[in-house]
Amino acid sequence: MTKLKLDKVTLEFFPRTGAPVLALDDVSLEVGEQEFAVIVGPSGCGKSSLLRLVAGLVEPTRGAITLDGIPVTRPGKDRGMVFQSYTLFPWLDVRNNVEFGLRIGGIPADKRRHISDHFIKEVGLEGFESAYPKQLSGGMMQRVALARALANDPEILLMDEPFGALDSQTRSLMQELLLQIWQHSQKTVLFITHDIDEAILLGDRVHVMTARPGRIKERVEIDLARPRHVDLLTSPEFIAIKRRIMGLIHDEAVRAMR
Amino acid sequence: MHRSRLDAYAAPKKEIPRSVYLTVSATVGVSVLLLWCLLSYGGFVRSDFLPTPVEVLRAGVDGIQDGSLAVNTAASVGEIMSGFILASILAVPLGILMGSFKIAEAAIEPVTNFIRYLPVSALIPLLILWVGIGIEEKVTVIFIGTLFQQLILVADVSRNVSSDLLDVSYTLGANRRTVVTRVLIPATLPGVVDTLRVTLGWAWTYLVIAEFVAANKGLGYFILNSERGLFTDRIFLGIAVIGLLGLITDQLFKLLRDWLLPWATESR
Image (cartoon, rainbow over all chains, first blue to last red; front, side):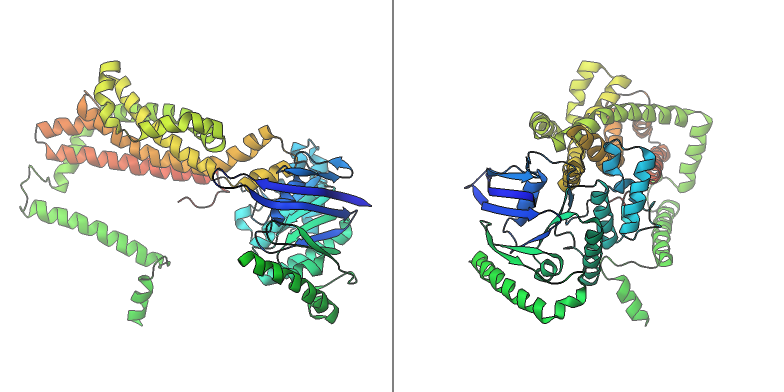
């Protein structure tokens, strides 16, 4: 069943000086219920803009976006987001960061605590409830950001290169953790990355984007068995898919350089 | 071995042992004091140009005993706090608006930038004409001098709040008002405290200038009056008191920041 639908979405930017920039051109995309969808593309292809459109932070120039058949017009807690940059509230400790959405949603304290306990445990941060963000490592901060988004019980989780700023070891651990959590929660996920390994490891389906203006170039089904682990990266099936996506991306990267 | 250690201390942006740090600080401090002693006691500089440390201390004791130090210090501190607090009350909210809402920026920034580059000392004659030479004039000088600097600095602080921080709040279900009150404003606090700390230092400059021009009390007046009688020791005393007050307020701001905002990263 279709959860998220983008129908011929076009996004143009109008800079104060110079010609309008066509960031996304006629993008159509469907994400099914409980699907883990990944968008991969060269940098500058507008994949982050696409996610911001779904979040309702930006309005499309043309086209329609619907979640469960309801048009997206503004940001809302049904679409939780995790950013690449660290976006924890520095003045709140881990627990209060996780409870932020619940608190402004008027959820009573005992229920909030129950929920935050659950998700702090889920991301493996028990014992850090009263730590401030400045005391946490990058990986820990992104785990809190994930817990904070999940605590709101969103319909879809939007992730904009959430592990892009982490070192490769931490990134692998975070990928496994995310897979685990996704398996438990069965949330629909739309995940943006430029890392092909990450895209294949995580996704049910990988949408490859073209260089600017961004279009969906190809949809690749990832029929690798789940649960998946990082050691999958060296398997022949994985490498076959990777070769295919690399080819698609490479053409685009070259085109973007020209 | 010895050479390599010295070599390590000369590397840019590298930590050095605390003991080395303190030794260097103390050595420079003591050297300055020694140089002062040498020049004054050694008779290299005339005593009405450069008093000895003991003469300055004695002037301090005299000033405490006859009450003049307390009166003048109280006058200056009173003026500076009034002007500074009034300016801050206005500058912090307006600065936050200016840095976050383009419409407020359009309204406030051009005029602020015009006034900001006027040396406030240039306004003193006009202010004397308008508000006289009493305490009101000193407070006004500090108010104007501080307000426009604070506006620009606070606006920068709020402009630098990451827009991702605001965006993530919207995706967590916050509305505009909640984003402003519960995200934008708390996010500016460390920068606002730093701004206040820096501008309070500047406020002393404006105050002393104002007191040089027309005053019958205050530390600036105390210094100027001492110069008229060639009481160099008292000039030194006045300067030292201002320096000391600056040091104390700066430390108080540091404590305030650590106490109020323990979550903030180190100040610049």
